[in-house]
Image (cartoon, rainbow, N blue to C red; front, side, top):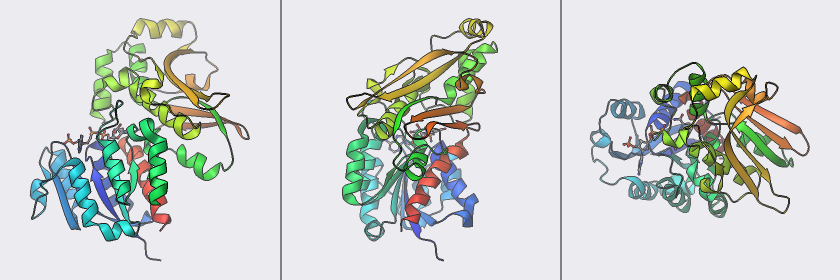
Length: 352
Ligand SMILES: NC(=O)c1ccc[n+]([C@@H]2O[C@H](COP(=O)([O-])OP(=O)(O)OC[C@H]3O[C@@H](n4cnc5c(N)ncnc54)[C@H](OP(=O)(O)O)[C@@H]3O)[C@@H](O)[C@H]2O)c1
């Protein structure tokens, strides 16, 4: 059976975007679709656009070594960001009409207005491209509006990588739990903070622990988004909006981060048989809507979240029909995040 070909427009080509093209190459015939990259847009490393497809591996190597994309095509794209996406959508109108054009949005997280991702997602959906993203911003800030726009345009807006990387959270509920109502969630969903708390317990400095996460490409571009709880709040907003019918934004999540914690705090908890963790939780309101919060909790030894290792994540969903459903992530690298995008692309490919 011939596999459908997807044309990918890459908005953002940092750690996640570059790992995605590497993973797509590595997965080869295991993919349910074939692909070519029609455009790449970055902030400081130029842009590229080609109707016949770009050499994605070469582009990734070029950007990773600090180069610009400008020299990669005979006629370099002179537009960037939103205007490049609009131009690419015009270039690939046949693919858009056929449901084969996909915006892959991996620009930086913005917890206030979600920009530039929000505009990228809207423009792509309006041009009848599908959208897959690892960026939490759009679904954390405007899930209902974007889901409605996608439905009107008969296209998909998918964001599996927004929470727990490639482990199925939204796919799990959407595809395998039909008719099940999620009542609440609770979990450790920020790898950087989990690593920081473990490092403090071992007598290390917070700054060194953050540097570890930056070196592995896991910390946010601005690590204060992790330390001040914004990343977890954005994820909690996405979970509440999608699974609990909430209408939250990151700033409407009650939030506390780990910045004020010291090694003494973590070790004092351990002496009392407890473990500190940054926990995100949320629940439906009895009269509709949902609330969510992120805070440092002192966990008793029998709490499943207390058993997590230094870069583990876990999310427990309380449901009406299945009781408590747990998802535990024991490996957290860029491959897991890139796989989230692959799984969303597969959903689109299978729909063709
Ligand atoms: N890293 C992870 O483990 C992980 C896990 C889950 C989700 N995520 C999410 O995935 C997204 C990408 O993460 P990352 O680690 O790949 O970030 P990153 O390495 O900082 O890359 C961000 C990319 O976005 C580009 N960019 C920024 N502003 C732009 C704009 N206005 N127009 C076009 N491009 C723009 C940057 O271009 P320049 O490099 O030229 O500035 C860069 O290519 C973030 O939203 C993050 O929250 C990341």
